[in-house]
Image (cartoon, rainbow, N blue to C red; front, side, top):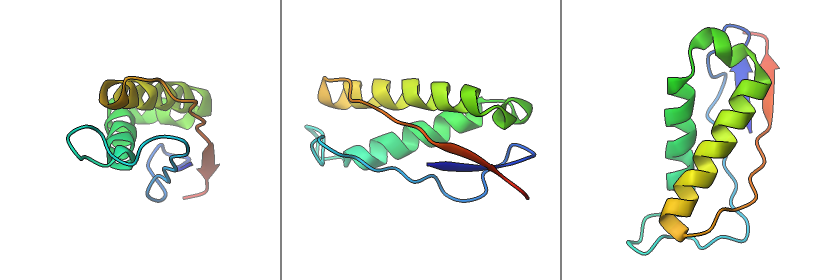
Amino acid sequence: GLAVTAKGGLASEPIVEIDGIPETDAEGEAIVDIAYDAVEATLRSIPPVRRRDTDVIENAVRRAVRAAIFEAWGKKPVCKVLVSIVES
């Protein structure tokens, strides 16, 4: 889950939950860390004004997390992204 301010900033750290996926990749890196890194990188790549659009965030983060886990695990998981806009 992601909480974003009306100005497009993160209101808190993203929450990443992993179900039905191995805990680590073949090199021992935690899959949850791989997913978290993908979330952070994706959010940084979206211009702040576009971060006010929950659909833009949800779609970009979903694609990035699925791609990162596919690269680490070889399978694309079901990925749900929940974005809330909060008052800053």
